[in-house]
Length: 224
Image (tube, rainbow, N blue to C red; front, side, top):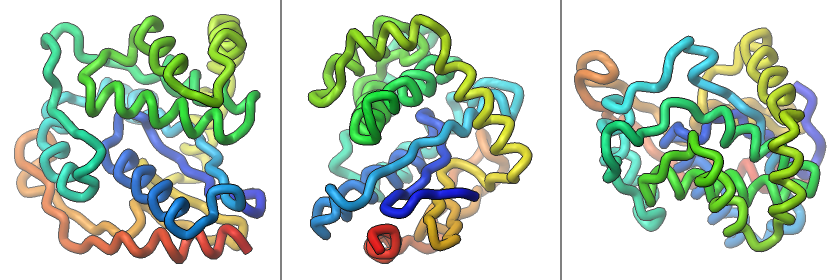
């Protein structure tokens, strides 16, 4: 996996709560270590709906959110509060928005990615809808929203998402989130090991080990 120095490459789906915990922890550690200007995130799409050939079942996320909420409690998690028919069944447009934001630099894509995660997991907004994606984009302070939306509407970012989906399959990315560094480091769901009681969607996940300090090491190594 080719990764630039000073970069943490993150493969994830926006509708993955474990990846959202990873991003919250990564950004928090980056700020605390004073590495915000030295280390950036290269977001890569790991579109679960394409890899699994189905929308991610809401019952799985409803079981995961109370568990992951304890890992990053300040994020403002909420199980879905909207009507059932408004629940997002696709994240492709949201993933495209993150890729389109890269044209304005990594900070723009970082902000768009996190704004969309908050829209879904904290605000119960349907990120399948363009108007919701636009609202999230316009909330980002370092993003030229009009330029991003113009690129998004052109459809160009879909090619990037599709290419990354195909690469994820061919390179056997383990799941969302999977992080890579320039030194060859490869780690899936950093610091967390877990298992499901019963089948996913029927039971609930249990965190066996959790070490959030792993992000300090990852960031220091990325900054070298």
